[in-house]
Amino acid sequence: MTMETKPSPVALALLSVLKPDLYVRKAGRNREQNYNYASEADFLEAVRPLLAAAGVAVVPSYTVLDTHDGQTKAG
Image (tube, rainbow, N blue to C red; front, top):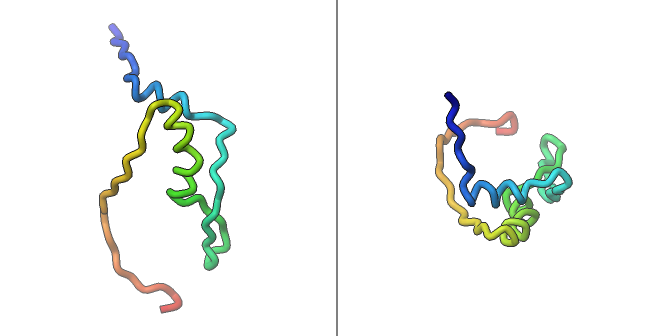
């Protein structure tokens, strides 16, 4: 017997924002490894209007999972 679950309204709102043509601008630049990247700010700039239209608010938070002190080749 399988049990079906209904997606929550929040999950449905988030799914409505996912679009295959969504483009996130890569404004960051890593000069040492020579590549561009999309920062968290770039991502939020792209999705915040879509989330707002779907009735979803973004509340930033973070948790430090691990830290490590090390030395690079350059010292």
